[in-house]
Length: 360
Image (tube, rainbow, N blue to C red; front, side, top):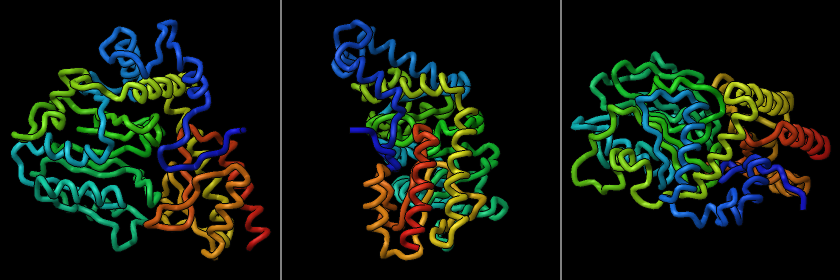
């Protein structure tokens, strides 16, 4: 059976080269006689895998030496709690930006630990834009400011990094990490669930500035303390070893293919082609303000919602799968992460044009 083009928002498509290498090494990693899944996380074989993965990620993102890179479990949703637990440091409030469903969940969890100041919201615009930065009601005494630069469900992506002065900037990059270069030094904490643009589900990466480690709230579970994970090189308990290994293969694939600048150029081309197909038609529509359209997650609707099921059925028959929009939004959603080849987007655009001819 040939592989399909998988537009899932996550768990998402992985590079074929990575899957092939993992298949070749599945039963015997580099002559060890073991699968990576069978290795002790403290054995020399896996320790080498882990060290190489961190080194490659540091190189790809140009992560400064005063940041720890943590390979954790629990998904980005656990970070919704870990961030306030570790960063409040005696303060009573934190600033949050609300531009979509994941920002909403982060706010809901933070309210368990502190007063949340929602400095900007696009709720009234149905999460179709990003509020102008000049309208944000920032609190200079906030413990940190949290935002979600790419909302996976609504398809909204920031085109700027907020300027917060001395207030640490915390960012949930689950669905756009590694899609283009960023200046890590602008952020206090960057976290991301792996299953969208890094690797398989089960791994979460947190990049934490050194001065924000060691201030966890008292009487919290030990697994919620960044310091514990930093001191134990992300191995306080057994980490998600196979997901870590696959992530490392993805990092190497990115390096072989020109790094994040080259990836950004490819991602921009893919997104431009798909949005052009949507905008050039009266049959398809995208609700997001053009300036803030996501390069990773592209929601779109059909002129006649009664055709949604037919679109999905015919797309699947054509080898284009997982295009159904999130249940809270409806319509379609094409997630075109790094691993989605340009040929996949071309195939989708071609199918959309043909479907419109036959059903429009």
